[in-house]
Each structure stands twice: as structure tokens, then as C-alpha cells.
Amino acid sequence: MKKKVCLTTLEFPPDVGGVGESVYRISQMLLELDYEVHVAVFHFKKKGKSLQRAHRKTIEQDGILVHRLKAAIRTTEPYAPSVMIMEYRSEIYFQLRQLHQQFNFDLFHSFFIKETGFLTTLLALENNLPVINSIRGSDLHKHIFDPQQHAQLCWILEKASWLTFVSEDLFKRAKVLLPNLEAKSSVFWNSIQPVDFDNFATPELVKNCRGMVIGSVGRFRDKKGLEYVLDACAQLTAENVELTLLLVGDFVAREQDYWQEELKNSGISERIIVTGMLSRDEAIAYLPYMDVFMIPSLNDGCPNAMLEAMLAARAIVGSNVDAIGEILTDGVDGLVVNPGSSEELVVALRKLERSPQLRQELGKAARKKVLEQFAPAVEKENWAKVYQNIEFRI
Image (cartoon, rainbow, N blue to C red):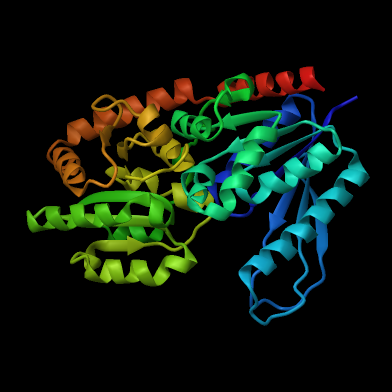
């Protein structure tokens, strides 16, 4: 009889986001490993939306039962955020418990420990079931600085049956918070399916690009280090380098005003193109038209966007943080700089602007590495080992 696993997440396709893409990819691997796979998607209620009852919508999606859990909205009036979060978590927990009562899961697996990890771990322990918690990035790089979250994060790390990390940096931080995690932890990178970029039509905005196209893809926010890219591009334009900064995606809503001000004050606003949020296929269609892919994050986990740029054989400039610095070998398949350094970005970009041959060599090496070392079969084997360890404990 197939074991039933429930994955919990904040996003799942068609939602746009790297975690959602990873959860979808992993859910397909678990199907191949002969599990019955359910995905519970937690939808956070937003102030100002219309009133609604708590409800659940379940569909079958590519062999997976996807359950979208939505909390009630009983007032559109503002009230204390702490109360709103408490009510939301209580209602989502109730729906997750009902889901378990209906399907009788054998194990749980949460992605991104702050929002999903606590509820999932609590329910699993109350039912004497194992729980895997997968740490993706901001959960230990950002939320750990919220003193109200510190005890909860440590509790989740302690109580998890197994922990997975997408970078050694995340694992090291977890060990600082809770030593002796090695016996129940795995560290491995994301994988990526090969992409045939010839299947995509030329994106409309490509016609507006001039000179060296420096691009990036994603939801742009504080951790992405975009300020330093703006400064570096401004320095290069002062040296009469013709360039376009192509930002495929958009800024997170709460930082929109800040980033609009940054673009306006950058001195290169006429050289910047922001596409707005796109589907994954629409976004990666831009990659072949970038001369350089930038990922100068201050922290980031293991970004799918970089792996996609490697598939597209782009010359990559990335910061020496998390899996970015672990994956790229400086001067071999990318250029690696210290995070928060506009000066190092200028040096790297200047080198690439002056040598199209270097851009081509780095891109070819990046594509070779991602095809050989980041094949889905490698990640699938890693997940098989994790689940075998869990089954041994059941």
C-alpha cells in the first residue's frame, strides 16, 4: 500500500515563485518513488479583501491532490497584526487537521519553516507522525532576527524528524541555533529540468535593449542586492559603456515605493527595463538575450533562477553566499564577488564587457556543470534517501 505524504507550502504552481516550483518538482519525484502525494497550500488572508468563509479547494494536478486552504475573512477593518496571524494560523491548522482526518497521512513535509513548519510539526507530533522540515533561505537568514520567532524556529529545528537544507550556509546557521543536527540533516542543492530555449518566442521588450544586456530574474526585494547593481551600472555608464539593465519580474509590493525611488535616483533610469511579473516560461524566454546574468544576493538559498541562467549558457556574476557561492567556481563557470560590493561588481562587469569570448566560455562551462551535476535524477536520489531514513523510523 502506498505511503501518503502531505507537503505543506505557501505557493504551488500556477503561483509564481521559486519555492512553489521546487515543491512541484519534488512532488513529481515522490510520485515516481511510489508515494501518494498531497500538497496543502496555505493562503494567508489579506486585509482589505472581501469577506469570506474559511474554505478548502481540492483539485488533482498532474497526479497530485492539491488542497488550497484559505482562512476566513470576517472583517475588512484593520486590527492588530499579531491577532490576525494568530487567527489565521488557528484556522489553517484546523483545516490541515481535517485534511489529515480525511486522508490519514503517514508523514508530513513542510517547506519554509516559519509559516508552514510550526503548524505542520505541531500536527505531526500530536498524531505521532514523522515530519520533514525543509529550510529554503529566508526562514533562517531573515526571520531569525525577529525575537518573537526565535523560540519557535528553534523548536521546529529540535522537533523535526529530519531537516533538509539547500546550502551549507543555512546548515551552519542551524547548527549555531541547535548543535548536533548532523544525525537528522541532509544538505543538497535543487535540480533543474533541461530547457529548450528555441521553443520560446522572442519577448517583446527585447527590442528595447541596447549594448551589453545585464539581466536578472525574480521578485526583487531587499535580499537581492539590487542597489549594488544600480551603482555598478551607473559607474560603467560613466565610463561610456552602453548597457541595458533588464529586470525580468517586479518588486515586492511592500517595497515598490523604495525601488521606484532607487531607479529614479540611479542616474540610469532610461537604461532600465522592468518587465513586471511573468509566468516562468515568459520569464526564462528572456535569458538567451542577456549577455550577463546578475545574482548579487545578500542571502538566497539555492535560487532556481541561477540554475536556469546556467542552462541558458549565460555568463553569471554571483555573490559568495549560500548555494550561489557553493555552485559557481570563480573564473571557471562564473564570476564570484563578495556580497554588498558595488566595486567588485564593476570589476566583474567591466571584464565581461571587454571580453565577449570570456562571456561565452563561462556560459558554456556553466551549462555543462548544470547538466551534469544538477540533473533531476541526482536530486531524486537525495530525496529517496531522506524518505528511506524517515520510513526506517516509522
